[in-house]
Figure: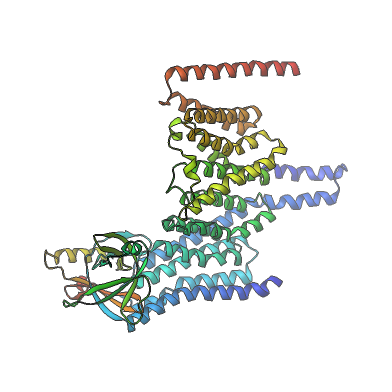
Length: 428
Length: 184
């Protein structure tokens, strides 16, 4: 709730109590409830400043150490490499004993602690000329930082852990099979998210965690893909983004701000971008669905993600079917359409696959415009406009075909509009 | 307060484990530097910038490949291998064999292999950088370039080897440690 609204409520409450509409007890409860959100802005600033301060100090220490003081003898430098870590641990111990209730202290100390761990390992590596195996460095750092998430309830530590895990998998995915550890690794910080979710799912903390988790997940999928066949990304990514969107509408439907609806934002953006990309005919040229099912010992991770994401999305889609929320069902339908497209394209019907996807994008944008609130209406218009522009300049289609398609769509819109006007007049 | 009963001891355990990781890295290397057998490798430095760990001289060592046995050679590619080594007549290290298991009783290095080319297996040796102070790393490179005319390549590194574990000890140009050489 905005500050203005809270202030209004504060002014209204005494009147409501005196006129007997609200009991004094209920009014007190309301006051307490909104007091927290009234101070929310200040709290957020305090937490943000402590995080930024910790980040700056951590980076400062890393830079000073990176100078690599030649004058100091090796044993002195070896001892010195413990300094940032011990400083961070002492601070963390203090916060744990005295300031555990303060989010600002916990997040600040947690951030500094995570950076100090990296600084210490990097300094040892520098002192002993340890070769630049970046993947091992990041993995060691991330795993050592994981306890910070739970000891200090630090969400920044959780974010850094997820980002570290993603950087690690980007470095290591060349060694077949190691990429599957990305998912259990990512899962190690998820209990922290659940803890925050249970306290208040619309808190900025949950929003930030969800943003980073869903984006890291998208990158992780990429590294588990794409070395053997060309079409695997279609079912996998459409499944992933549709699943993320539908989970968002299941768990975060009441969120008003875009960061409270991270799942819908990330998932929705993924669905929109993918469906526009798949609305081109030449994207479908090289898809071979039979190749996708050719499982070997070296591509099993890929095959696993090929099954998991679309199937999870389809399962949830079936579950949400009874809710009859058209927009959610349309966003969630992308993997169904995409798999149908892959099958069509496998039978050399690329044009049909392309048409199917165009009808889907059109349906999605029209539904958003028709049923939407202000925001959805804008998004729907934007999708429609993008579709029109990309089709207008699409060189795969002949001018006559394009012209006829545009005229048909235009007539469709005009007829719909006439029907709408009659409907509203009828309602009057 | 109830939670603190186990939370603080847990914190102490975590803090200790975190200290053990760098401590272990240090101890193992100090032991190898103290007790390991010394080998010399020819080196060619260049100088990139690594924002994370300061400046260093990138090393490209010679030898960096090993002859593989003719049968079943492909299995040595792109994996962890164990390379035995000894000292050649010129006083520099030479690789004598490649194995898939540790070679106890011999001097050997555990390293990663790359591709195979005409019976030679390329190695990704774990000594690709020599860290120096920010201001001296570029000087080191210039000094090296001035003193490495064709046929006079006198830069080398010393590496200590013990039980398959190898640690880069020092980097020499014209017979002097590079840190001393650049001060002159």
